[in-house]
Amino acid sequence: MATDAKKKDNKEVRERKLVTKKEPIPQLSSGDSVKVSMRIIESGKERLQLFEGVVIKIHPSADGGNFTVRRVAYGVGVERTFPYASPLVTRVELVRRGRVRRARLFYLRNLSGKAARIKEKRLSKEKLALIESAGASVNEETVVPVVDIDTPVVDAPVANVENTVAESTTAVVSEESTRQDE
Image 1: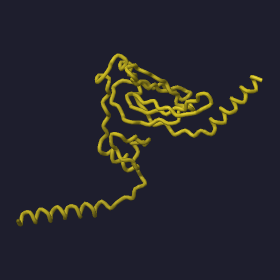
Image 2: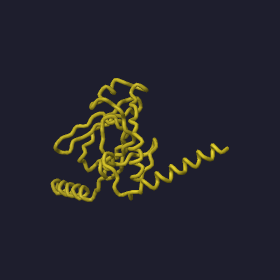
Image 3: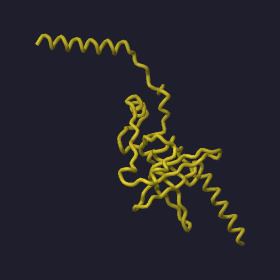
Image 4: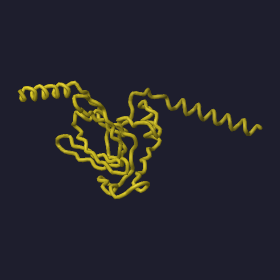
């Protein structure tokens, strides 16, 4: 009887895996602040639990790899490793990009307070414009969408540059001439 119940549980788990749709995980790097939503199943009930912290390690491998997130909760450092391919990881939000010079940030374990903060990676005006044109406004609380920044957006219609340049130069010339007249 125990084996029948076990088979039934395994079948239910397989069905849940097929039904669960996962959002794509954004391109992460060490030092990024992320929010990871994880499905927790306790005594037959299912809920989502958020884990917010800093990515301290990324381990790529053939099975998809995993990433480790660190946070300090009530004065105690907590690290949790999440597999990329896990069906229990439902969503990963990129809160902010961090500017670091190492791939493994284990030195954060020995730091506390302001010393453990990581500077934010600032984007250039061109990259900000590209992200905004993709449909997201960029501010401190915005989650950065998964966008390949190196490729230009091709969907926008191409404007006639010669006419706009000519119009703007005539407007500047007319403003200067009115200033000189005064």
